[in-house]
Image (cartoon, rainbow, N blue to C red):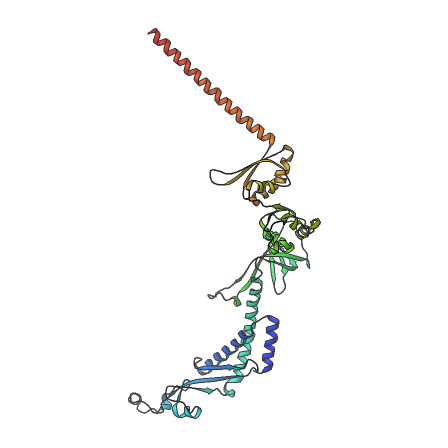
Length: 413
């Protein structure tokens, strides 16, 4: 094949990130397959490919048989000779074998070089085609491995176009992906050439009619999102050094994409302010993330092991007067929160967003009441209690009256 072929392979390996040994193994296999097509067998073939020079040699391995026929063979084929019965692709007579290997004996194997003019030219042509095919296959595998390693990470791409259905085609380097409309954030608009950050949900190959699930024969599918809460989580992990180092931990994220996010954090190291670390000096860190999310509001919340205190923190910026966290009869987490009349609308939030996000963040169903609502509720409860007492008294009076009638009747008798 020549040293120039090996040098060309080296360039491909460096450029495409393909394993050179895989390509050379493919060359050897193609040579064996070509040998089989010409000589009806590949099992008795040996290929030696020089990894430096690119030169190769092919040997046909044949079993040594006796020159003379056995008695059984003579009885069965009375007019035949050994040359008539020998399988020339797999066997060689002892006399011929001794010319190649003086140590040959009946039953042993000898290696016979395959002549170049018989085999080489066509075999090299086939091998080159095999290398090109293998390169394409290995490129697919390398591409899959590269992007599969980026699952649950953030990648950056360039918007190429937006189709009629609102899907965004994005160039992410060595390939393209599609940001589906249902994974876009409402209100975000992109045009050709815009840079965009995407969260990689999943990387997979769609393989048709392939039982071995061969990644080299499938179509690469990269599922990405802009609306998942995990995008916010990864942005904080990239932006906040303390999170990357492990001194601050993100406990949970609740998001209504394009509008508002609450993120709960806690410190894993004493004397580290988790909220201050996430917000940054003068709010620089959180502002960077807000800008990346198109102005989406972000509340950084201090996680607390006490559920009641965690709920109070999650309802920020509203101020809580009192709270009761409990499990209902179905073991569901519930909390009743009381706020001042002036804080009620703030605690609930626009269209219930603040309390809804707090519930997602904490895992508790939250019922918010104002102080006046609680007073009225308690007053109603007291009123119901008084009415019950009056009914009981009335019932007792009736009972006493009936007793008196009965006694009068007895006296009369």
